[in-house]
Image (cartoon, rainbow, N blue to C red; front, side, top):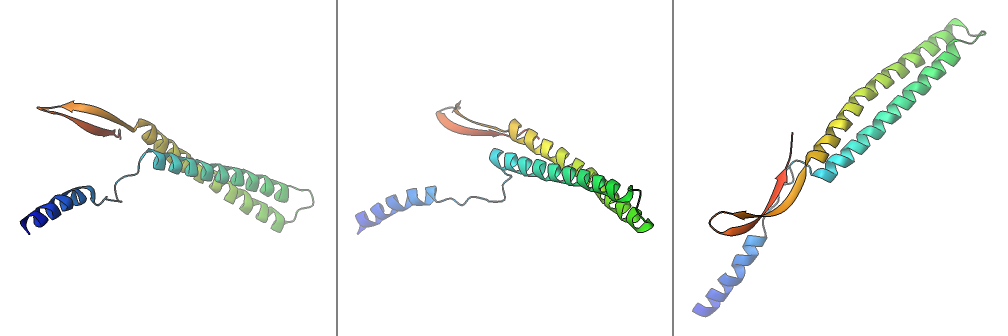
Length: 128
């Protein structure tokens, strides 16, 4: 019985040491930052392009020779929304650049640390 208990403990210790929980709230890694940067840049280009199209549509509607006051007001509203959309793309371009710089500044490497004994270590460098 004593041997069975010792074997059971020897088998249980490695299982407990490799079954550690990971914390999912840890900041994202390099690929996550790059994906986020790409999505933000795409959204910024859509806002900028859509804003430019709305500004152009506003000019076309409000500047024609046969336009009434209502048409001019509609064109001004479309142009105003287009300007706001184009201005709204600027923060997304800035955030995209910041996330891309964060991703490019991250590095992970494997090296042998020397204390009293040599042991392998994994290093993750995040420049913020």
